[in-house]
Picture 1 (cartoon, rainbow, N blue to C red):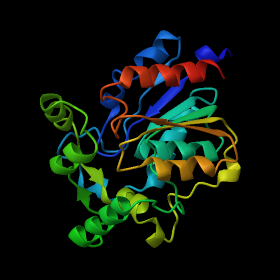
Picture 2: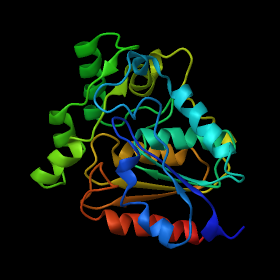
Picture 3: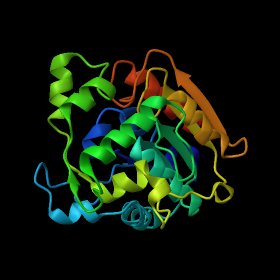
Length: 256
C-alpha cells in the first residue's frame, strides 16, 4: 500500500486526550492518511475519573493500543507525544509500527536522566506524594504553565489546561521512577525496534530535554533521526510553530 495511505496512530501524553492532536493531525489527513487518535484508558471521564485509573499501568495502555493497531490491517505510522512517545516505542518493540515520530518523548526503562531538573522533578514528586502507585494524580496548573504550556499566551494556556485530566499514579511511577519498578513496565528492547524513527525535541524543553532525547535516539542503532527545534518547548503539538513541526513530520513520513 502506498506510504501516503499508511494509517497513522497518534498517542497523546499524560493528563491529555485525543483533543491534543486536533490541529496536528491535519497535514497527515491532507496527504491521505487515515488518522486514529485513541484515548488512553479512563482518560475520557473528564475531571472525575474512576479510582481504577490510579492502578492503570503502562502495560495496560500498551495492551489497549496494541489491540487497536492489530485491527488496522497493517502496521501504522505511530506518532507519540511525551508519555505517548514512550508508548509508541513500546508498540514498535512489539513489531506494531511502520515508523515512529517521537515528539518530546518520555524515556524507556534504563535511560538515565541527563539534567538536574529531571532528577529534582522526580524527587519532588516522590517526597510530595510518597508511594503514589495506585493513586489518581491531578494535573497542576503551576507545573503545566511553567514547563509544558510555557510558550502559549496566557489565555490560550488557560484554555488548554482546562482540558487536562487526571493521570494514573501507577503509570507515572513506572515512567518517572522506573528504577524502583521491578516489573520494568517501561522497558523497550532496542534490538526489537526495526523501523525508522524521527525524534523531535524542543531546545527549551525541561520535561524531556534534548540531552535526554538524544540518549533515547542513540539506543536505536542509527535508525533514529534526531532534530532539536530552536525556541520550542514541550507542547510541540500546539505551541507556536506547531504547524511547521506537523508538516515536517508529515513530509518525513511521506518520504519513507
